[in-house]
Image (cartoon, rainbow, N blue to C red; front, side, top):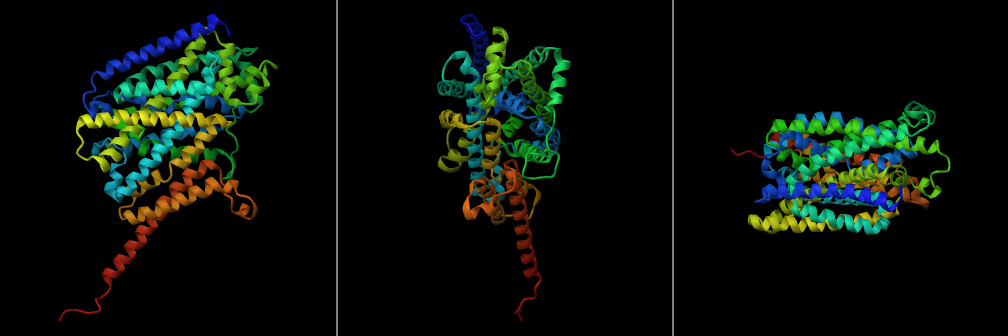
Amino acid sequence: MNTRVGAASELAVIAIYLASLVAIGLWAARRQRTSDDFMASGRRMPGWAVGLSIFGTYVSSISFLAIPSKAYASNWNAWVFSLSIPLTAWIAVRWFVPFYRATRSVSSYEHLEQRFGAWARTYAVVCYLLTQLARSGTIMYLLALALAPLTGWSVSTLIVVTGAVVIVYAVVGGIEAVIWTDVLQSVVFIVGALACVAVLFFGVPGGPAHAIELAMTDRKFSFGDWSTSLGQSTVWVVLMYGIFINLQNFGIDQTYVQRYQTARSEDAARRSVWLGALLYVPISAAFFLIGTGLFVYYASRPGVLPPTVAATPDTVFPYFIDTALSPALAGLVLASVFAAAQSTISSSINSSATLLLCDVYVRYAQPRATDGQRLTVLRVATLVVGLGGTGAALAMMRIRSALDVWWQLAGIFSGGMLGLFLLGRLSRRARGQDAALGVAAGVLIILWMTLSPSWTGSWASLRSPFHSNLIIVFGTTAVLAVGAISAWWRSAITDSAARRPDAVRDP
C-alpha cells in the first residue's frame, strides 16, 4: 500500500475532509460578533449538536489510538472506565446541568469564588489549564504517530505542523464553529472506527468467529483482576477512577460546562448530556475491539509485524493503517484520527482561552474591558494555549504508553478540583478556611501518591501502595472529608460558645 498513488489517495481524502472543516468553521464564524458568541454561541445551539460535541470531546486520538494499543497489549480492563459514564451522566442531568444553567456564567469556576473566595476560583483554573495542557499534548503526539508513516515526516515535525493548524482553526473559530465541526467529526470517526473493526475481524483466517475464539483463548476480552487490591489496575480501581474523572468532567470541567451554556434550553442541555454519554459507551467498545482485532490479526500472521513496532504498542495501529488498509480506507481512518484529535484539541483550546479571559483577565486585570478587548484577549489566549499544548506534545515523545501517562497526569493536575466543588455543594457549613484546609490535605495526598513511588533508601518504606489511578479518588476524598470535618468542628465550637452563659451580665 505504501506507494505514491496510495499516499496520494489518502492525502486526497484527508484534504477533502479538512476543506469541509474549514468551510464549516468559516460559515459559523460569520455570527461571531461578540465575545459571548465566541464563548457560548449566543446560547442558541440545538441539543443534538451539543450532544455530538460532548461525545466528540470524549473521543480523541487518545481514544482512537491509545485505547486500541492498550487493548492490543493487554485486555479490556480500561473499558470499565466507560461503564461509569451512564451513572455520572444521570448525576449531571439531575444536578449539574440545572445548577450551571441557573448561574448563566460561561466560566465553570466563578461560583467557587462566591462560595469560598477568589483563591478557590484561581486554584481550579490553574488545575484545569494544566490538565488541558497535558491532554492536548497527548492528543497531538498520538496524531503525529498515526500520520508519520503516511507522510514520511518525523513525529516532531508533524506535532509542530498539527499544532499550527489547530491554533489557526481555533483562533478563527469560536465555540459555535467547534460544535458544528464536532458534528461532522463525530460521524467521520464513528464510520472510521466501525470500518476498522470490520476489516480486522474479517481479515483473520476463519473470519470473525475464529478471531473471537483466538481472542478469548488469550483472555483478550477479560476485564482483568477482580480482587479488592488497591495497588493494581483492578476492575474496582478503574471503576472508581472512571466515576471520579467523569464526575469531574460533567461537574466542573470547563469543556463540558461551557457546552451546557451553548444549548438553547435546559432540556436541550440535558438531552445533550445523555446523547454524548450513551453514544460513547458502545463506540469506546469499538475502539477496544480494534485493539483486540489487531492482536488476533497479527497473531494469525506470525512474522508480519516488525519487532520494533510490536515492542511499542502505540505504533501498532498506525502501522496497520499504513500497511494493511486500502488507500481510500486508510485515508478515511486517518481523517477519523485527525477528526478525533481536532475535536478535542479545539475544544480544550477554546475552553482554556475562555477561562483566561473570564477568570484571569477580567477578574484581575481589566474588569471593565470592552467587548472588543475581550475578543482580542480570547484570540491571543487561544494562541498561547495552543503553543503550550504543542510543547507538551513534543515532551510526550519519550513515553511508552500514552494512555497510562494521560490517565496519571489527569489525576495529578485535576488536584482537588472535584473535592472543592463537592464540598461547596454538599456542605452548607463549609467556608473559605475549611475549603483551604481540605485543598491543602488533598494536595499533600496527591504529592505523596505521585512522588513516593520513586523514593529509595530510608524513604522506601513510605512509598504509596496505591495505584496511580487512585490519585484523583484519594485527593478528592481528602478535600471533601477534611473540609467537611473542619466545617463541622468550627460550627460546633461556635455553637458551644453561643450557648455558654455570659461570665458578666449587665445589671
